[in-house]
Image (cartoon, rainbow, N blue to C red; front, side):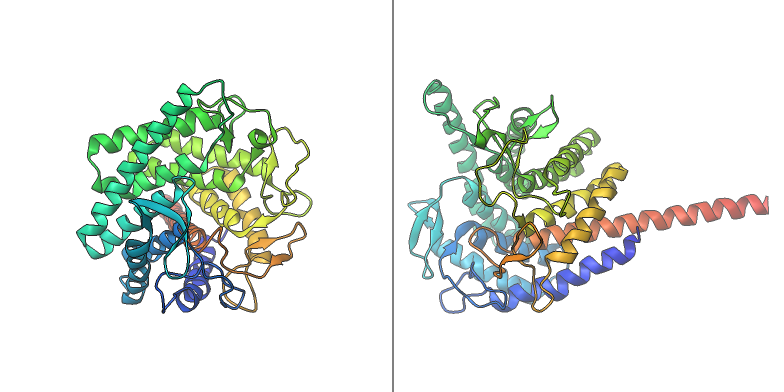
Length: 406
């Protein structure tokens, strides 16, 4: 593969088509925050604001400012959302799920995801600005999430034999990312204990070592539930979790963890890929049984963005050819079907034939976070692969020349 050309392609797409769309269309200049429902041309079709998506956009532009280039435009856009969250994101000291355009509560948070997204956002924004109120808010939010989840787990243990409370992978996944983002703000012992606990939950409850599958929903304690929900696999959450596990592997130098994360992703790819038509299904059944979800065969842009990131990064960590195989397959399908060749950004949802189901570019389910982060991670991984290949070529050339001289 021509890694250098691929890296340039991902970089150009990120900075010339994705980021400009969000800079131009997402900002609510009247009431603050960002619009979370935009048509293919960037027109607003709903003004409610989803707190996790508000926070994820703050994270995205703070991250770009911190990691790519300290452009005032990026920091100003991040501040636009951070100010809105501080003013309107909470009710009675709890992060909300949805507010209206002016910031009035619409719906409470039903999971820990809004709080985790806010903690991530404020940690990145604090790194960009050095303003301590955001560090304090990020720290306190993570402490509250960890405490609330501990109480929830204790409650489940007390209620064994009652209702069937399935746990979803997206909660420990979100908490793991929040812990990674806030690690410099937390007490080292607390960070270590909290991270080990959530890692244990993912690796020993959601990851079934017998069949090497990362499940999306399990019973408390990790027991398998042979039901429609218990068998349903979600490649997107699996790929995203694997990406976060690679972050842990990078921080700790744990090669075994990197190998495990890559194997999680590779097996999910085998199970979720639509072999006749290409692309990853939204859902797959662990036992290949019929689905009752009418949208099970939809192809979502953010799932493919996460897949591109995990397979490009996975190759850097493990040098497995299967990573290259899946990156190539995902790359070819993704760039053929998702980018809007008339307007900027990507189509959000495709049918099984690869045609856009809706023309919207921003939805109340997902915003700019996955695409910006996924393309950034893929770009950097491809650059690293290109540099490694170049070094190897130069080393082989020096060896051959040395032998000739000798």
